[in-house]
Image (tube, rainbow, N blue to C red; front, top):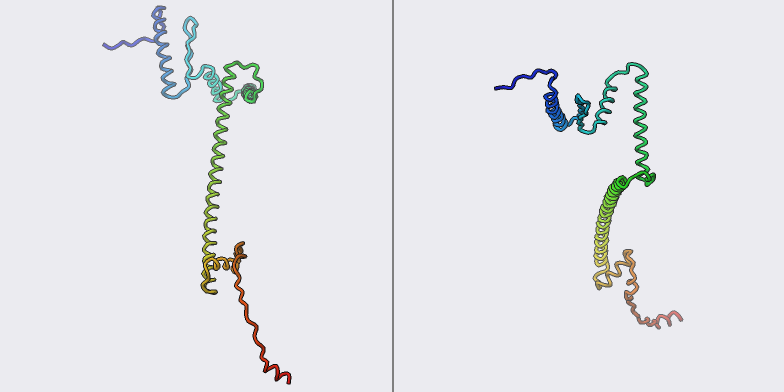
Length: 233
């Protein structure tokens, strides 16, 4: 048999009213929690019992929910008069000044200043923040140095390749000069030819001074005495 429909009206019996309040309150809080999780919504729920007791639930914090509610309400509603507009902008300026003050204080603490009012837990948290920042800085510096080393290695490889090409060209030109020398002056001793080719084609070498010079002495020619006597006559 189905459950009968309950008439929505005040329960006169205080005991039944308290039991119903307890059950409905738990169910309402459960639904609010499910709504926040399933729909990624920011939910705030406040319940006051008949005796004045407060029951609340907030997906983040009740204060942030209320501040967001007030801000959204003021933004959505047009300004009715200049006084309300001035108050709105005064509150906005106060919030910005407080945020600026917090940022300046946090910056001074990171620099190691104004630490007298911090507890051991706060100092430990500040130390952890600094260590994380230093770790990130070191990682970035190592990455930059690694990239620079890779670029230098690539340049070194290019220079090495260029040197190899120049060495091959020089060796090829040296061989061509030796072949040309052999064709022009005939077949010489290999060592002498290689040394003389350096001198002939602009390749100076300290060993070129050690090449032997072949000198040959010739007999003086005998004078023709008959021709001389005729000339004397």
